[in-house]
Structure formats: structure tokens, C-alpha cells
Image 1 (cartoon, rainbow, N blue to C red):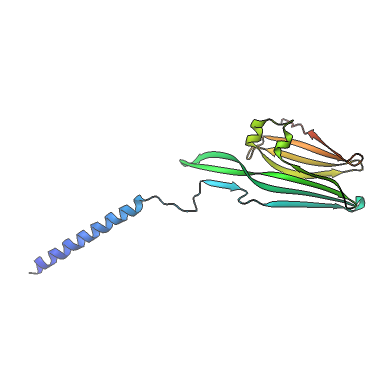
Image 2: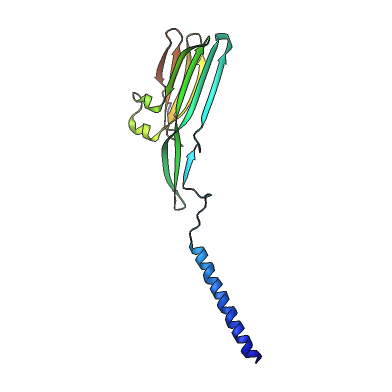
Length: 180
């Protein structure tokens, strides 16, 4: 009698274990989707504004360079361990304001499209406006340095802007790359 009573219990235990094994297999068949494994990455992640103000006391100058990130992107697609990865680099525009004695000498906005005379459309499609900096000031001019580049490479268009005090004009010059 003990044997007949144990047999149904063993059969029931075996069936319940095999059913749990099947349930576990179903759980592992489903793809795991988490926000920790995104395929699209943004650089920078959000639209931001960076502002650099410079005061030159002896010339009573105020120079403001503002870099604003845009909703336009340059993308770089590649594969990592068989998974497609898309890096999206935000383009930017640069605002330049120069004041002297509280009078506006220059107020302009730069985008990479402003440099059509220097760079072709194909390069513009793969490049972002990387940066713009104050380089130096003398009695004749203020010199700025800018670069438009393809992200994650050394492929760039470098230029200088010279703002001349005498006629309040801004001139662009190409910076030649030294091949080493």
C-alpha cells in the first residue's frame, strides 16, 4: 500500500518539475529589452548651450561666443558584436558678439553652411561645427579660430576669423594643415 501511494506522488512531482522546466525555457526564449542597451547614442545627449565671455579691460571690450547645439545630426553607424550601433553627433551654431564701450561692433551667427565657399556639400553632410575660440587680440584686430570636423576623425576644416577694429570687418582665412 505504501508503494501505490508513493507512486502517484512521485509521478505528480515529476510532472510539476518538468512543467516548471518548460516555463523556464519560455522565459529565456523572449528577447531581453532594456534601456541599458540602446542602439542610438547622442553626443551631446541633450541640446545645450555653452557660453564663453571674455572681458578685455584696457580696451573696454566684451567678447561673447555662444555655442548652441541643434536638432540636426551627423550619424556614424557601425557594428559591435553583431549589433548595429548608431552614434548621432549634434551639429552646432556659433554666435559671436563683440562690444566696445557698450556699443555693438559685431553680432553674427555662424553655421557650417556659411562656409560653402571653402567646403563642399559632401563634407558638410558628414561634419559638425566643432568649435570656435578667441585666439588673440592686438591693436589692429581680434583673431578667432574655428573648426568644422567629421566626428571621431582628424578630418577637419580649420579657419581663422579676423575682426579688424579700423573698418569693423570680419575676414575668413583658411588654416593650412601641416602633413606630418
